Length: 233
Length: 77
Image 1 (cartoon, rainbow over the protein chains, first blue to last red):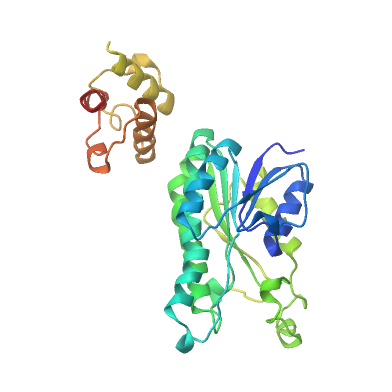
Image 2 (spheres, each protein chain N blue to C red):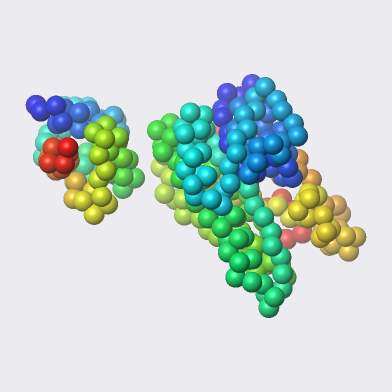
């Protein structure tokens, strides 16, 4: 059994839900958040849930007290959204919404946990990015910019916190079967993936588990890709 | 030793994992006591918490020795 404590934002569905379930399965204590905690359709003795709107600074400030009491060892910044459109048709509000939800949220929520990790001289910050952030994707100028921002944020913070044994990495999933990618996945896409299938939430969760564990002690500032081989650098 | 000085020395020794014997009021946090840039930020946060103060960033930059920390805290509490 593991006695570490982990926060997962956007933990009620999709990749976030897969991450929460895999941590619970390994015996971690998990604090999972959602914009509306009624969205959780599962429960577990090791699971606490909380309302958190990562887009809203006052909601994040309200969350500070819960974080301080929970005293996390690991943070998984998973909450995210898309608002796809060709650049010519993209409005400034589409742009702002995605940058705010995906990138500004990482700044806000990470602020809540770093002090505690500094005191422990141990910590793991794992940011869920996307291969769109490295390879680009038509219709996703906002989303890919936000994800590239997350990768760069992770590298800089990794340099700042490395001396305190706090690692910061991002994970870039490819096409993962969730509500968010429902309309995007088709046979033609699957043919382009060397492993010939789309991913599932567990494929991402197992990498998150590894980065959260002692086994990843010497890995920081990286963007690790889990995409079936779709994007090779 | 004033109460503030005593508390400041204790906080610095805890943060930097050094012995009280190595610290004098004139000790420079960075040059003499080996604090790195993150330590200095953490120390300011610890002083703020301990003494219930808010130390503005531009004044925090001037807190470079034990004595300068004590002086600032005594002047502002």
